[in-house]
Length: 112
Image 1 (tube, rainbow, N blue to C red):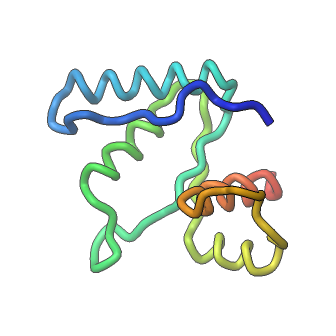
Image 2 (tube, helix red, strand yellow):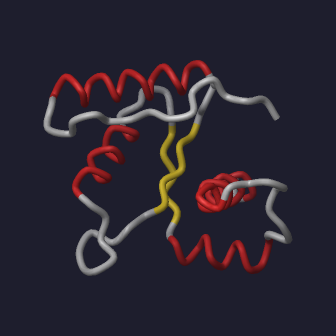
């Protein structure tokens, strides 16, 4: 597995059109550099106590606009079932915050 040059892409000001365009351009470049064909998004509630925030929905929309990439949505329930039934262990030294990303990628790869 190769290490990526880009560790984080941040949206500085979600009320700035220039920053939104810059974020989209950075996503576009990231996907090109790393030959990404599919982004996987874990779905979230749109209202209620567990709802996602406005900024995260903006970021999700920008991810959907990346040219040349497919978008797959995966529900938290599907990820939970997948983890229980098909994931025996996680990679050594994987940070806890990467668990959902790992599960999402593994889920889509096994369902291709």
